[in-house]
Amino acid sequence: MPNKSAFSLLHPLRVRWAECDAQGIVFNVNYFLYFDVAMTEWLRAVGLQGDKTMDFFTVHAEADYKSSARFDEMLEIGARCARLGRTSMTIETAIFRGGDLMTTGKLVYVHADPISQNKTPLPDDFISRVVNFEKTAPERG
Image 1 (cartoon, rainbow, N blue to C red):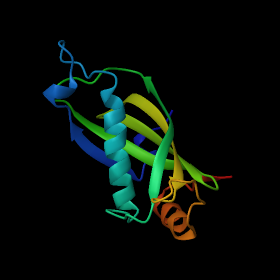
Image 2: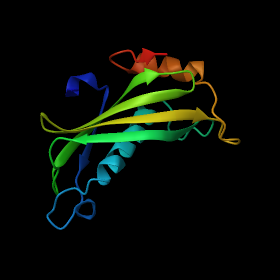
Image 3: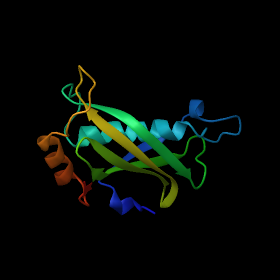
Image 4: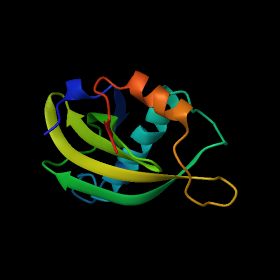
């Protein structure tokens, strides 16, 4: 199980009312929204804010729920690249409330040409940025 120190990116997020069910608990699908927010911030952190020369498509998403987040709580959403393949990458995510791990996730993205949407190899510059950013080097292969 990941801990906060494994993540180079931890993004703060306050739970909003619209993300909750009638009991004030975050509705399960919204954890994927939180993962997406963290992915956007992770791309920004590795220097790809607004970069239109690269495109990624989600091909797999999973979450394991450990405890529930509630309205108005402050969370931290972690994202880190756990694996770099030839055309894809795996992002490990985690949601923390204080020191407590609440949810873990895994997202697999395929790199694609923005025009044709055909998968293409990850650019060397991107791989270099990721390796330099992460605390723990991503698995390769």
